[in-house]
Image 1 (cartoon, rainbow, N blue to C red):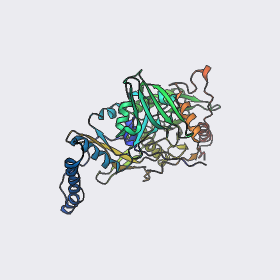
Image 2: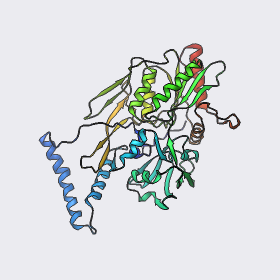
Image 3: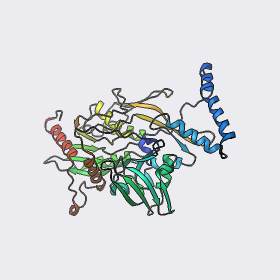
Image 4: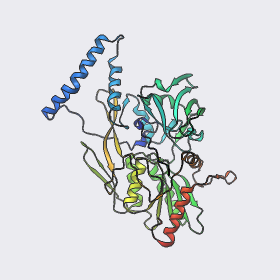
Length: 435
């Protein structure tokens, strides 16, 4: 059985910002007041040495330096020292995150990270059904060069200072072309791909319908991402399947990179009675516990959830809540293992904002899944090439029939889904654990 690689990278600056489970709200800010010894230590060990370095740069560097550019460099350096998810967002770039949470923006449909030390631009995850995914781009691929046909500008990845610079280049008006040079992780092959930007309107659900399961009416819903519309889309899809006599439901969260924490809680609430969904704890963040409010809309229908190593953040919150509360069974691979919460904190001097890790989230039984992920009840692990084909298969789904046009039937053999169907049959026939 292969080891599932955890691709952390500096995900905080991804094209799809909502994949972080980002929290937009107030946090405790540094006030300069508090313990006297602590203030002295910060002044002696940080502020004074930093001021000295700035003084030398100001007076001795070969060229004149802009205070603003130097400040931006200091922000980036500090954030890079913290963790894989904290980053500095320059002024004006917050628009990217606002677009992301609405689930609509112009671009290629990939999440990327940038390692400033190795000067590597890495694809963290392409979104099924988007232009980049349709061209065969997959998580782990390295982008070395970008050419924007609209501006006739050529960029090498090592020229970027942060992931936000790359995002600005890759995004653009729908209908315009961009050429990227990628090195595929699984083969090591280099390939040039010309991709036409589209308005990326991320669906809340896809592939809604019944799967082939002998005499059983087993519903299937693929949820590729969490954004503001996901909860309503999923609720409508469940209602549609209920009206068709659904006896069991398979929810597919494979390749779901996560999203808004609020959406994860709302969706968990749909399938749980009185229960804890997730708790959030941080050093200076008051502990919060999120629970259900409305009750299970499918209390008499068994549930199976599909996950894989690309299911991250908010999708892991949902998977953990379903598992720990005994509501359903998880099939697939251990999830990604992203168990932290980022807050977007605008800086008072209007120089930008900090995407700062302020807390960690815990599943109902108290498990912190950072790096470990959520373990499925039934493990079905795929090799990298199979995951690539699976992602392409999922991207070809339409919004009603899992197989799409009958004349262009997708021949991909989804062994994880087949195992989920078998597990559901066992639940329906015997009412016992399918393991």
